[in-house]
Length: 114
Length: 114
Image 1 (cartoon, rainbow over the protein chains, first blue to last red):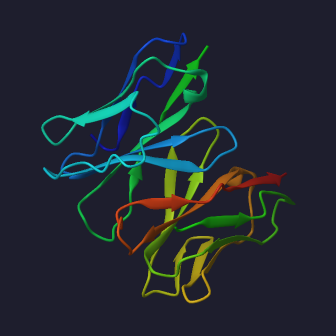
Image 2: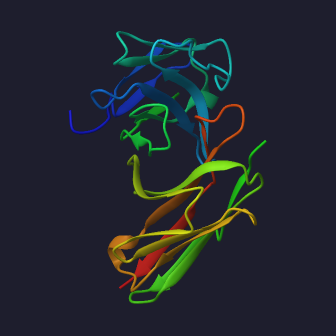
């Protein structure tokens, strides 16, 4: 596709439910990031995938959060047993490679946990 | 740990005015600095990327400067228009250990009044 896409654009869920957020990076981009943007806060790094290397999961806030990237392309961020503090916009970005180039961001998924 | 600060947090100007947004970062060991625009409910759009070896970048009415040694960057917007109203985010890619991450400021909310 022409850009990074994310789905769903909005997700409302009840506390305790599991949710899956999807990211389709730009074709051919080997690096993929997930960030979280909470109300009034800056963007917070969550996880980074680069090619076939082990992902950097150091930004995941708890073990309820996990992510995978299948076939080096599509990525899914899963949040188990959602809590109200998980409410935020989750943004995905991709990068052409380990270079000094710019990151391209998707439109984000707005998650609301009731 | 890299920290990015943006001043002011919010700015309201009349149409046609030239304006400057400020970004400062604590660790001068960076690969690049990127300015983004974020419209309400949308993802991030990259405006300008300045490599660590560069002093400035220009795109249309936008000019971004970088003073790496002092840990500062400015985004200059000439002849502002109501369509420029958005949140402007500054992000730094450090050259330290986790050099693939971006560290974001909290943004400046710009309102250009017709």
